Length: 66
Image (cartoon, rainbow, N blue to C red):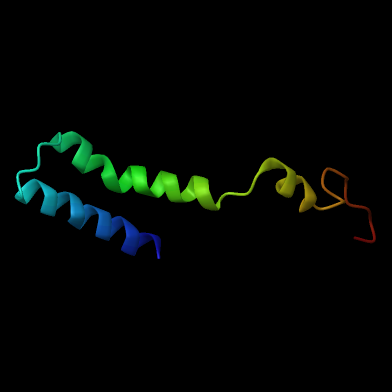
């Protein structure tokens, strides 16, 4: 799914360049990367939900029966 988003935003940037929109070509070239970072920030969980999903045995050494 991420590849489709990256490709779509890349194509949008190329279309805008073809239409001679007055936007820096460097900004248009970086749009796919910025969109990917934005999506990752939106879907990434907050710190509290990360703490809720941590395994209870994290950091404890394995015993002989484990």
